Amino acid sequence: MKRILLHLFFLLTLTQIAFGQDDDIQNPTLGVHFFFNDFKSAQNIRNTSLGTALRDKKFGKIKDMSPGLAINYMEGLNRHFDFTTTLAGSFLDYIRRDGSTYGKDNFLLEGDVSVRGKMFSNKYVVSPYLQAGLGASMYKGTFGAFIPAGVGVQFNILNEAFLVVNSQYRIPVTESANYHFYHSIGLAGVIGKKKRAAAPVPVPIPPPPPKDTDGDGIVDSLDACPDIPGLAQFKGCPDRDGDGIPDPEDKCPDVPGLARYQGCPIPDTDGDGINDEVDKCPNEKGVARYDGCPVPDRDKDGVNDEEDKCPDLPGPVSNQGCPEVKEEIKKRIDVAAKNIFFATGSYQLLAKSHKSLDDVVKLLNEDPNLKLDVEGHTDNTGKADKNLTLSEKRAQAVHDYLVKKGVSDDRINAAGYGQERPVADNKTTAGRAKNRRVELKLHYN
Image (tube, rainbow, N blue to C red; front, top):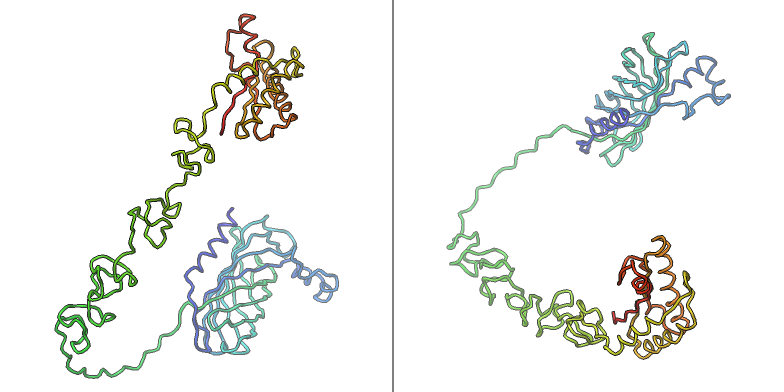
């Protein structure tokens, strides 16, 4: 966590950078850089040689490097030399010269002051440079000094920002420091530049002002309304309602409107709050979601489609727009329900149920708009979960029989309620018999 917070601190220091450079000397510039510290390669070179380290592939391995973030300030001394200072931080295992470490994964803070010698001035897109200076480090309370010596390339991006690539060999000055490489890449932007005084412009003596009777800043010779203060865009005439139509041409000068209605608002003939230009029923009050038309009522039963449970079948308001099931049909379906029988403790329909169920099929075929709920119920004999499963399977058995006889599956809903909805006292034999039942309920929605 402390590593993340430190990196965020470095990034936040750059949020106020402003870019801009118009000459070939480096203006004050602030940048952020991502870098790698490489102690391992430096140790391999000192133990053998650069050639041996390269041949044995013991130089420049990313896995042996430690990443970090740095901020950098640069300012030109002249066209080819810049002053630069860097503050860099990373978490790593700092290796002493004898190969031991100060500690594991601690924070290394390094700062240096250097001079860059550039091959080309800033007016060139690419400018290689050499760099040397003096630096200091702190690791677990131990301070050290080193000399940063390196090379780099600066890329000029539209004279506003710079991409800087740098590689240094950091040579220890004190015993507490160690040899290591520092490789970085970053972006920098100008944070200020010298201001140049503009040459003074002579102020001419103004001629006497022309006459402006209404004091609106438009001289009378150009003012179409010279006695009333107005606006230049309307040749000196006012626009009281601010609708862009001058009052002399506005038939509704105190109410904002449109030019095509001579300065008046878009009309709303039916007064439903939806103007005639977007109202598909301009002479009949409606609502916005139907483009100014009333909520539709497809079956013309007086219950609009948004509230009608059966929008294509006329029905009374009391039944939410659905037709009432006729009493004689209800009686027939109740008789059929009382004559549905199953094998004891089973969901196997008995053959003596078929006549009643065939009558249900006939009723449903006579009125294709009717829908049916099949509800299975049991008494409280046995375990509740088994009773629930049995009631569900019995309701499904009735459903499957009706579907097999040609009734569409989507017109029948089957559900089991087990012993949850008794209609009689389960303490008596007669009561339990009444509770073991299948109920059939017809409806239109």
